[in-house]
Length: 524
Image (tube, rainbow, N blue to C red; front, side, top):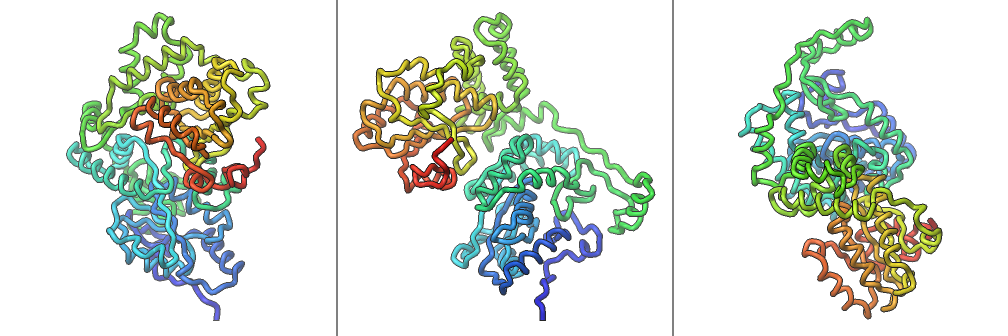
């Protein structure tokens, strides 16, 4: 007798075509997911065991939740299509019972709160591997959305309490996360973010464009709660009269007749006032970065004379700062390690960056200013990404011999590479990979290395993620101890010394060249 799917966790209301409630923690499978599960079971023709299931999640935000869910549906992954849930609070029993229900397939869980302390106990030992993915955005925008929908009381005490809970939960999950996705990045470059997510999950991403379009077309939730399948929240709080009691017959009828839907509209509460925004910013319960427009206003007022006389700052740089949010955030966030935002530090960063860029005409630097040999010799070049999807800028130290090259031209070429990345991928960080293979004393030019460090610390704010120093020879270890003294403590901690074994902690094998033990082609 053919085995049937267990129905223990299927939402009974959803099966009847009705809406359940906002925080329903049952399973809501689409017909597409059911077909994918059948296909998966038929193709493998095996007796499924709960011991073989992999759990992806928890994930935050509906975009990330649906990206994971749809990757597992469309990519024919070895894990199979997932069972997906929204669990407000995760317990060990929640996972164990749903893993049994999944019959060997993954679980994808969206959550917003800290789970029970033993939620992951024995998961790895029993064969149930798990991954955690998180995403983040400006919390004041989150509050504005909640107020507009009507899901939060407009009371500053309630808001601050909720923010504290959000931050506590986020810090917990981020400490366990395999990937952290920025809201603006998923909005502006969804295809690249889906490809990055797939790499972290260890599956193919051949359908990334299709999945991005599908996520973009997903329906938002009804007024009475999030959509059962996508977990997307409504854009406004509209209680549809035909659905208020869970009966959708009248709704279908009006759709067919192209008549307007009867609804009771509950106006969204007003967004945060400027005073409330400032109060949230000044609360010391967490470090807070100001809104871009707030800092822009402060900066333009503070440097009004320098901006107007057009002598100290490049007008193109100012235009980009005032129009490109991602670029402005690079300056705002650079070096902000304290619990509260250090505005004078950010203003100094802006001033020093703009002065240096004007003096060196950085905005207009272009590839045609350099001899063709600068590309042909493969000394400084971008190729592939680290496990966090940061571009890798390779600096092959053995290709340099002190005194043979024009150092000022090499510095400008390095600045061109930094600037090229900012123009193309503003707001995204890079990793500098110092390839020290077969390097001797004659190759390590302190002047060039010092420029790279100074440029990233003072003139290209928010660009560096960290340094990788690959295969540092013993003879140069003392030299790198000296180099590290040029850096502040937080930057020293961003220097990672690796070899062919440990570099895989930062770069996946398919992103490493064969010369470094990876599988990526050594050609451009």
